[in-house]
Image (tube, rainbow, N blue to C red; front, side):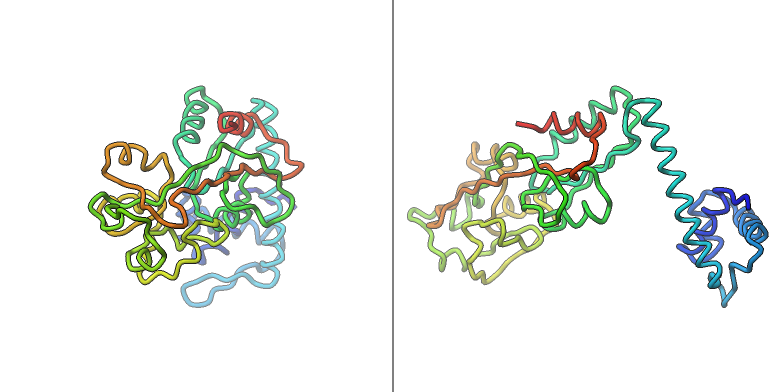
Length: 290
């Protein structure tokens, strides 16, 4: 048999998208080219791999078996291409990084920008998640590095501590709790809106973790949270780098909470044990190390 990579890709795309038109669009080809590749694959295999039901094409039992081998063939081709790229240039072909959105993105993006400016051939993908979602994305996307403020629960990772990250419980200067002259207790704090990002996590051990709140506003990221607090909607924890200027100007004030209005996170940078870090990964690790 002499199955081509295009034939294998056509079968995988058909299985994923369900129609020839969508499979062709995903591959940037016309649908006659996909049909031709599929017919050639069936001829090479000597088997009926596809059957039509209504508007969609479905794989036969034999098609499913061949699909498994096509996927392995494409994985091997990708690994070969990656190895050749690394051997030619010395750089890893791709670097995938996921980080907790509470961590400042500026140093990450600065390091990535420097490598891009130098013409590094590595394809770099950086994405933000939050709390437990960071490790879930690290595993799901087979990422190379993750920066998390929650300890990793999965096995087989190596951690390095990054610089501590301070956060303050703050409110807009016009908010009643920002004007309090005495320490605010749990009952008083619980009467006001507490702004959080995706519900928080008790493992953060924030002083407000055990507070039974009457009203909570859960947002998708810390920039939205900062905007809500600046609008006077409620109180919440913000990392120092996001509120330093407003605290200095007096636009935001730290809430005098009895259990404390300052918390220190210990971010960690993780990679898989035994994995060899390429130049791009090493550059990023070095730029973030304290």
